[in-house]
Length: 294
Image (cartoon, rainbow, N blue to C red; front, side, top):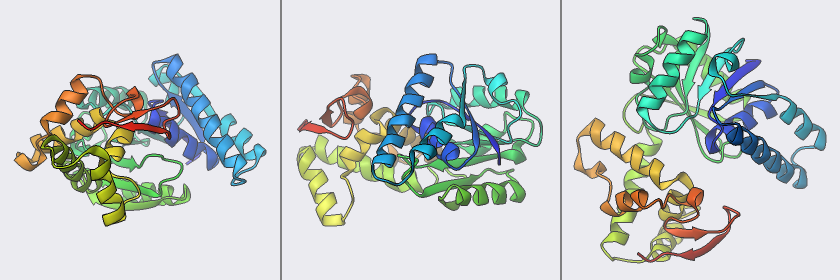
């Protein structure tokens, strides 16, 4: 893979673009918002600066990585000449289907179409294209440049050839690919989201406060961060969306989102991205200010 397009310049999209570009791949980063693209390049640059400061890469490495990224606001223009398109837009099924229809029309039958979706059916996405055998899930973890895991999700029609190609590509990116089948939430979120939801229910029922719940899971279960802090980093709106996908897909009440989560999202408390969720956050998303107890 020498030329890749990434659609979506948000947290996941810029992280994916960063990872490919740092591995020497030419990346076309696509977003309808010029501001989002400018912010993405700024974020990538700052993340590379941190790596330079830690002597993990050189200034020349940083320069080459940035030069490997070209930005576009038009999908058809941005996917010209690429071998792979990775969609990393908002976790909204209607939006993803619209994007995949567009990239299917704008690319040849040889181009592989991947989605970074964390829960939406790859089979459903593939069904709106003319080449479902070329559609696959490539679910990176956040923060993408650091986290090793990539869930590789096979849709009903995904070919062995495409699966093998993407597995090998992930390895070349320095990742550990794990192949899973196409069921709601796949593996990572099918296990993670019910835990996060149960932590929110535990808070909602007054069993313990935010910091207490997170402390139990960090110190008692050796988790690097508690489930409520992790939910803030993921985005509470994203957690809600994934739970709704699994609730609809399985029809099982154990996936029903906690009312507290629903209310927080409706109130605009999305976590780090909005500055407030279960915790309040400063301008630097790594700086926790104060825990919210309700």
